[in-house]
Length: 284
Image (cartoon, rainbow, N blue to C red; front, side, top):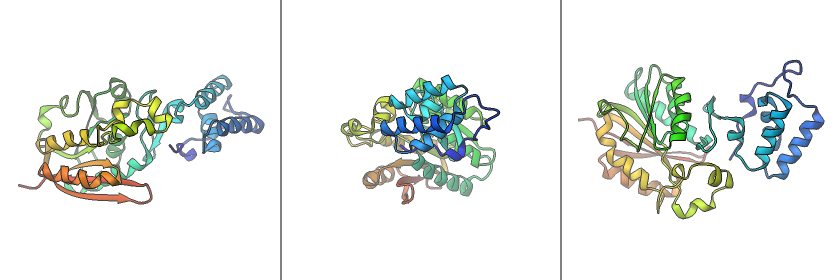
């Protein structure tokens, strides 16, 4: 997992920050982080230093990071699409590759609906995708849902900032019925790690993120199948379902999307190592 960009955090001045350490202290932090296996130790040290309110806070944050807690959980936020997204302990940390999914969704929403697009973010986790997309679009109507209560509490903070609503429940179940047939963009960053491979994930994910946000079933596509099967009932004519998947799962995901009556296509980003399957609702 990559560290949030240090450019997203303003560096405190020596006269304002009680936690700003000497260069020697910063060097000690970098050494501890590097010894703990943090690849981007220098960047992480700067982020911890600029976020901590006091020297005691800084010491505690470094201890938690060295102990294996994801950096974003230590900081309390993750950078995503240029935003600071609140991320509580146990909540899935948005990955940088998923910014590609948001960009694809923004193109689709602008082409279809323009201002006022209706957006649904399923399996929303922290709400990062919906919040980022609503920030790009003009006057988007945003709804998000997740089955994990901790994720819902976190998402409500992020989504409220852009005027959206978050619901707790399994996939479409908690959404207002009035949304059926009205959704222009349906984002679903579903879990897609095959069950047998969850144990191979880095400890930061395997130990500190909810399994429900990672485990996609035997072949990693169980949740995608459920989302896709119901999508035509919710999408507006011409509306799009966008899901992230792995490159080797894309062909089967396309078959699943086509089988639901949606028109599939695949978008890839070599830069972010991201694969997105898009299913478009045929116009009547």
